[in-house]
Length: 447
Ligand code: SUG
Image 1 (cartoon, rainbow, N blue to C red):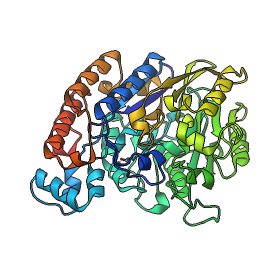
Image 2 (image 1 turned 60 degrees about the horizontal axis):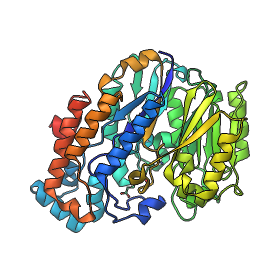
Image 3 (image 1 turned 180 degrees about the vertical axis):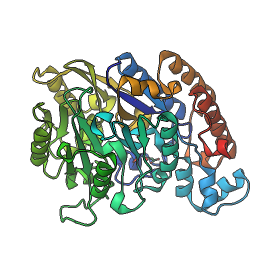
Image 4 (image 1 turned 45 degrees about the vertical axis):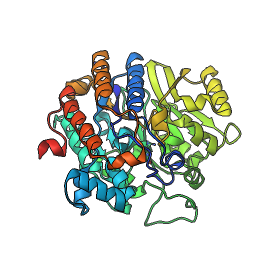
């Protein structure tokens, strides 16, 4: 097997709901309190995995986390039976209760930052799970994500799964959502772009005013060191403060890349021209194929509404790529027109654009690319991945049956006090670990 870039999608969990937990994430705020549709959400996620698999790209599955996390609520002082814990927590703190139920681990682009073995001095794939310390409901993902990644990428000769960085603003880390790998092909070594929003030791007057940035420069620099990357093949760039204030809470909402192709909005970075210069130099002699969107093409607001940069750009064959864009891009006229121009332009390898419906996730600010973690793998490394998480039509069928059987059709905010719903969700997860051949990974299984 040649080297590939596998996409590991977060399977959308049965507790998917709209709790408005993410200030700075416009859809999360505007859909707060809406009724969610977990079954539809999971089926949409599986259909996306199937489409990517059918396009010939290696696809894997990451299981959801144990939610609701009643142990977390107990740690915070809520006592009694499960029903009492949920009742007291939902009375006293709807926010903590919602954090305990959040299915946010679906957004696997925030699970970790990954460097392929062609970039690391020990020739292993290095992964640093994100500490996600900017939001409490996400911060509680880190330890289980580490356990899950260590179960899936268990072969120490080939994979190094680090601990998450310390939970301090100096190291605020949101994972691969702020990381892009460039190379002539997936089989070759290339350059890694790390993007941050703030740098606590060196504050700047050009900081966002409305929303907080999530990723620190210190996190980027620490991961570069821990993965042992060659600094001449690393670019570290700061997000534009206007982008963050428009709702670009992760870089993957405003730029994306695949092999040597780079799609970006001109307001993605504080110094976009400088970032391009550094990338061109680091990637030389491979040319960087630049696909910009200017303010005249569409505004930051249109980029955020359409989530066009959260498309998956996938290699179909040498020199032939597809953009798998969220349906919302098709419904944003100036963005749809730009996509059409990109697909028609022979100067880039984009052959066509396809739209995919992940509406339930989108309503919480998670597009197609948020739902997946990219992992560059050689054939041997792919063979060393636990086989049960490899997506196939057979696994698609089994997971569809499992979702149909275990997922609620809807969750309204008041359902988060329901202990029987909590039990049903956890029973489903117990069965899932057997379907995926993962063994015991959840706290309730290990207790
Ligand atoms: O961290 N939404 C997620 C969306 C993450 C998207 N990921 C990437 N861009 N890669 C977040 O803001 C909303 C949950 C709620 O409001 O119920 C939420 O966590």
